[in-house]
Image 1 (cartoon, rainbow, N blue to C red):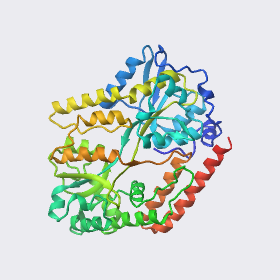
Image 2 (cartoon, rainbow, N blue to C red):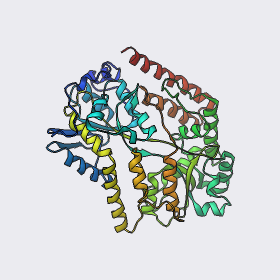
Image 3 (cartoon, rainbow, N blue to C red):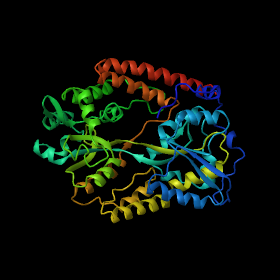
Image 4 (cartoon, rainbow, N blue to C red):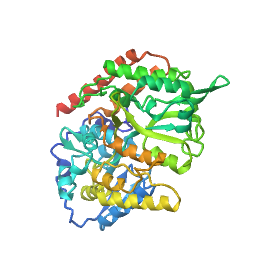
Length: 457
């Protein structure tokens, strides 16, 4: 989901241009009184959240119980950024919004969401339990604007049979040695009739450039979120490597065509069908694979940097209270209950029970709540010999070695700048250094403009 470049109304256009005043003084919630013991009423309209599985429904039911007389109304569908910004600008926002953490800084800078200091204190939300990288993503200019929820990291996921047949191991494709990846890629890939039949290694561009850059020792943006670092030589080197993986297989187009043809969420997925050797991939795919193809020959590890240390680019979701929320007290309580340890434990126990009844395996859940993660980890197999046990162990190890993008007022524009230019490299229209130089200019211009608008408030 991208922040809209233009909007359908003058009011929304004003908000996108940062016409709203800053919210550092919390004037938008000056009439709110946050108290974890208060009896609440009204209706909490929630935008961007869907109760699609037991992890969501169990926590939602707990939230409804603690909201007392207050009702919950879910606005169906994923978060529509334009619709959300328009609703805030028109003075008719939802009570609560569920968004990607990477969007929170932009929303905060544009006055679309409010700081949560009073909410956190009144409802007794213990922010010390949140993973540092997750909390940093929702902290803009020293104010917390979101309550972080799920955590997403990457693992190295591979077909064990293909590795063995080619004379390689998971250590050759975990990222610790880029020359080893290139050698394994060459040995794992298979051609049939002049076409690529098995992807050796998928470096997952354009989306995983931040992961490859960090593995090479550099972030795409400075720690304070003000300076783009896209043209850093280490980023260029990372992009050159990740693209060379595709070049060795006939180009990105060949790999993408085979990637897109796979039954990704079914029993004919790339690993089960033998059409992929290895790739970095988000940890939630382990649960998918174990569910639809439990007998697939799998091998797992963390992704590792060039020093051999585990590394993961953390992302995820968060709850935020819009400017002008009609029910900020109930919204805050719902955010608290949805992310507290007891709720996560109840949801994990329900999933584990369902998986046991189905004859499957509980592969854990990653949240931004470290206390919950530690407790749930005890319920999942992490010390067995099976590949799935190794996957769960790797998932939790990765979760302890994360980095994240800092909150900034131009998150969407920044991401769009580097993704657009990486795509031009993948299509052969630009060389990596030239593309990243152009990305640097576009990203820095967006950051400078957005920060200048914020600093003037």
